[in-house]
Image (cartoon, rainbow, N blue to C red; front, side):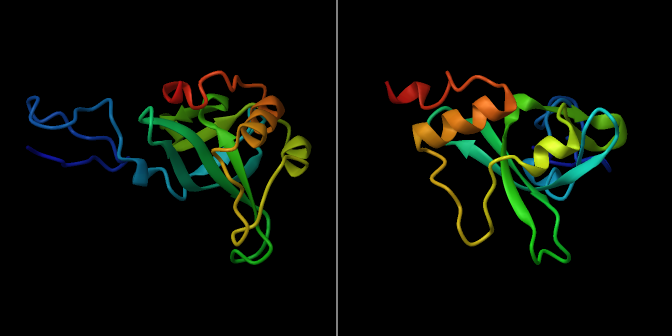
Length: 139
């Protein structure tokens, strides 16, 4: 099996011997820029959080502000609120820059309990996404 990737991190279709061209390694998104629809830089991808019960991506942790990680704020953005922009090798988020500055966030030494239903509902409400799929497999 071949796991060769192109320059953008997409798996190369090697005659169906590997993951294929429609799949990307999650690590290739770490460090990518996140822009809004006005082309304003909002932050960078710090981490990708997977729901281990459903196997789906739940959140992208975005870092914003600060200098050399000092004073940066982290935001858990629901995956459903984001769109991949493969042409520009970045992610887009349909939100004004001022709104992201007031979003619920946290610092690198004080992560929230992302499995907490109340926290998850607040985050999803803020970004206008549905929290209906949270812990769906835990029923």
